[in-house]
Amino acid sequence: MVSESSSFVKGMMLGGLFCVFVTLVGHIKMGHGTKTHHHEHHHIQAPNKEDVSNLSEGERMELSHSIRVYCIILVKPKDLGNWAAVKETWSKHCDKAEFYSSESVKVFDSVVLNTNDMWVMMRKAYKLAYERYKDEYNWFFLAHPTTFAVIENLKYFLLKKDASQPFYIGHTIKSGELEYVDGDGGIVLSIESLKRLCQVFEDSDKCPEQGGLIWKLSEDKQLAVCLKYTGVLAENAEDSEGKDVFNTKSVGSLIKEAMANHPQKVVEGCCSDMAITFSGLASNHMHVMMYGVYRLRAYGHNFKDALVFLPPAGSEND
Image: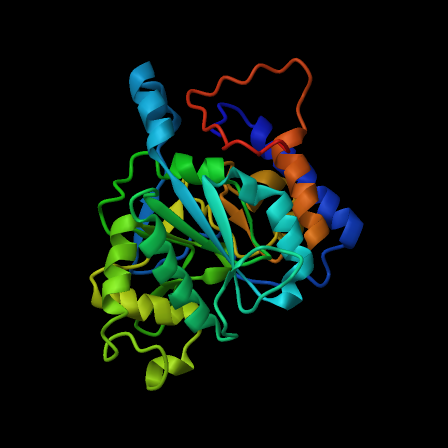
């Protein structure tokens, strides 16, 4: 959803403030914020408002239907609370969302992977997603159950990106010589990147399922190693002003930091207006975020969006 004013972020900030006051955010997982980091990776920016307003009506309609996002949510039985919250909230805005579980859980449908190892889970999920949906979706978004995503903003970010090119996008971190996308903020692969990844899965020397040095790395670092062999490098996603849009902290944590570090500019110091993800959320925070992002509106305000991404049927909660 593309906003021409600050109404979107105000609603989102209200939702975030609710999280702060309800839970005090004391125990929420801490990660990397929205500050600009000087790394060697590429910085991929979202289009600005002028880019969209200059498109013809036909181009807008074509683009709004051409971006198809398949969402992969990796879950385990211990995640039942967040699993339910993600299922009831933001995942309904994906063109299709499926939960990939370490084992079968009676209360929810899932694609059962029969492993507790996160790297093996990720590998299996990507391979199954490619085999089943390579002809239906052009962007593949992977998230953890503590992540909240605004899919409309993701589609806006991808508006002028070519899925036939090897894009691997999110919040990037440098670890030694390796640049990787932090899984806590969500990971986006174009169909071309996913194709290359599934091909390198077959090469146990470059991308082993287990054993060797790679086995000691976290799953998001292991993914980066495998993709690097295919020529796919991590890209840091930013808005048109250079602010990160994939966040590895919750709104509550970011607001608290902004209040402490930038008391005169809390919103500007906190988050991008076009933020795509926030992480470290409890299940009740998911519902608060839905209220702030999708439900809270100023009565009589006329939204002047140049482009609209309609959620699929069944998204009755927005």
